[in-house]
Length: 85
Image (cartoon, rainbow, N blue to C red):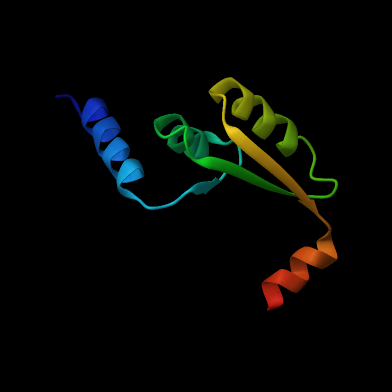
């Protein structure tokens, strides 16, 4: 087994072994790979208001992978308050 196949198998085992029901999904490479390996997970994207194109890419990848995807938009004040708790 080559290194790429070995890594893929290890990721599959790790993703499927976890008890998680959801994935914080950015639509970036790392969260997209994890979602592709276990598409039954609920994908959740949290976006700051005026976050640019992040929402667009997360939605495109979620559609491509046929994920159960939820997007939540929060304001800056709400984000700061959550961090300070």
